[in-house]
Image (cartoon, rainbow, N blue to C red; front, side, top):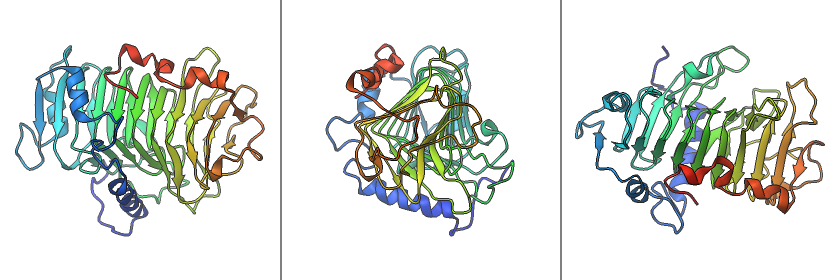
Length: 349
């Protein structure tokens, strides 16, 4: 097991975290999501799930538990009613696993700038490296940052996965959460997922998997890794056939950061990614998309954009398979109907 702490103040990932934190606290929405109109906040979610069952976690000892995992362990097997686990502000240095036997958990933090779940582990196994793993359906998180602080000096080795969160369940939602790492930050493995107002940081394939997910008004912040001869990509979606109903849809939000990045790379033969009404800074490379390390054809890739804007949204030099969607083509991706969200989400925008 890797050491869960890091003492180097000069570690590039710490510098990136500092930049990200400064951006968060200077945002008009801030860390809480309470000050802007049309924002889903903690009181609204608490009202929607309508439960008075709460476990309090406080690292300073002013709750039932000082550990998030201990609180999860206290939820009964086969739980069938919503349980709130309120994680008060602090840095919780632990790996946390929500097993499939414990659905209906609402993990409620005090804001992604205040409540942090942190571990430091790289591995040749994405799942093993993950700071947070959820395998239970009907899971909600609000106002928590999930961080993998593994050092970046593992490029070109088998120890290059450092996952912040592994999402392997259906009907999972994250509101105003943060996901921080370098390589393979968010493993959106399988199931229907909704991310609202989240911040996701990484360098290479930092949102990947075979999930069917909507990212609404999320920020994707790129860390440049100059040691690598290839440019990173925001997504590596792994849809393998036309019959597989998966894909990543980004509605509004922005892609920005340090260095250059592709919006996505071909991971599966039918990889499906849509960016709609999203701001692209100059961080987005002119080609937009890449098939680096993929040996198959590009005819079935669904790498697409719709009404995006910013200096990185110029269409003239896009990869030949990249699609610019019409209004009609984009319509099926523009709301939560893509994930049948009205049937299970407590709130959405």
